[in-house]
Image (cartoon, rainbow, N blue to C red; front, side, top):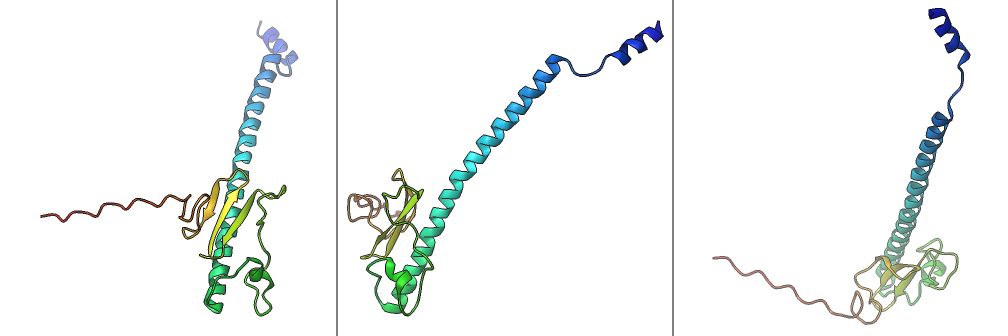
Length: 153
């Protein structure tokens, strides 16, 4: 009897159809998780690049102002200054560009720099720059003053 059981076990080899289907489902779930995780990293990378470009332009604008006493009229002066280059290359400033994920806006009157995604949302910027729709930062409405704390007795 025992011989027969051992003989039957030796003849069985391979996986059943159910076992193979379970493995395929598990691999599919793992692949979906990896694809979703990689997609999230791409969005964060564009945001980090936008913030980095805005910060580099802000630093270059302030360096230009410190040396020349005024903000540059255009960002081209930061790259094409005959005496000194404040930036190696100019980031995308064309909001109608089809290839770039974001663009940089510069306000020469205040030296403010802002970065926007293609959908118009702000990714990074200066609090000195006027917002869309007005002369005040953030869209034209001046912030309401916060109440001053009352002295405690």
